[in-house]
Length: 594
Image: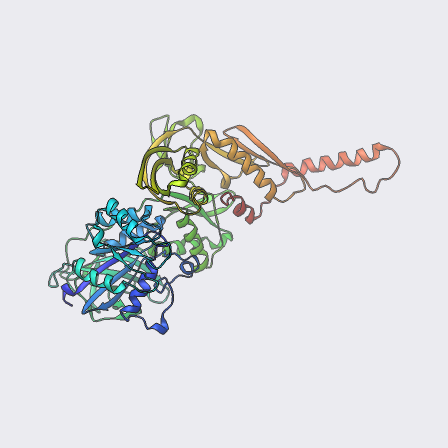
């Protein structure tokens, strides 16, 4: 295929600005999908994506338009899936930046645009949803020109829902996005930018050919894994997977090489031919840095190995998950997992339960702290159970986020109040237009991971948008709060919090557990403690049997004697008894605050 006839591009935007709808229209207009087969969110293959109306996985497809071949990659819009976007951009020469004509630029739009500029990609800006009564294209075109420097007359207007203006966008892609470069006669260099595990065919990898050609049945060398496999099938997604005889430079397609070991075809891997192949690997991706950590434990202890296999297969599909084995006195054996954010954590847990038929408990989310001990050594702690004793700690540093919030000016006060209540420091306040303002705060990550996003949305009626990046570590006055059930620490409920909020957290958890733990045959004290000091307490009262019911009349000493006997029995039972905590108590207690 001639290189000057190929265009590779991604669609990027804020969540819910119409990326998936635009992909649907492009598939329809180019004839890649027959009208009778068309359905909304055609490229979103997961049930979860359809239910929530969001894109979680980047998807690629090949379409034809006016003697040109387009390779289109539809990317997620939520900040938690930014790693999917960055991997997709490595396989493109340009991006279509979609902005809602009724809402204008949002925080994630800016983040994705800067990501595209980092990769030195050509940007085609589009104002979508011009058919809405609330659309104001002139105003938001001016906003894009001011903030991103894209000339107003180059910004296209369209409605992905009705199809108006989509033809003009496809023509603009041919004119503005450069064709790929590559040498068909050079040694083969292909980049894996995504993979997934198929139960019957093994690993299916999405690849972009940079140099050389990849014929079907070729013997291939995976350079970083150091393994050799034969190409059983290569092809393109049209959008149905269709085998082809070879893929040349600039082309995007898929590869099936009968790989069963999930570690052999990771994202960022370079593929070349086994004989006379390239000597240099392509630059891969920088490793994603997990922000939120949580323990995942199978409710049935026998599912531990199944959970290990499921995480390995899911990590192939979503390289931003990290996991290491851990054990908990309360929950048994499981894994400490790292995620890019709370939505990411929620989606991964749900995918594990649906796709691999597992029943899981997730512990409350925590972040990674840097602990400097009194002997000068520094350790990273992402699990409260691993925090050293207070007398061995010199100081603790916690991660801070730089938050960028774009909001209508009416909600500036409530948002500033929210950020300040979460120990935030304002860094910048900039008016993008008379009606919209950007607030930049530095906030401890531990204050963001719980319910910051939900609070922000409720205080701004859903109009504010958020983007974040790590801003380094700072020293803080942090303590570990333990929960004791009948005097025994329940490690699943331990957490690290700022000293000012320790009492509030401890008393709240004690109250919650008092409601959730079923009554036993003896009183169960629930205490929260910092080190050896108890800071709050609640008691689950014992079940009482009325042992005096059979006594009537007569001397009071008869009743007292029976009650004393019962009291002794309860004391003995308490000393040898264990508090039975049902699995759903952990789930309900560790749910984020309603």
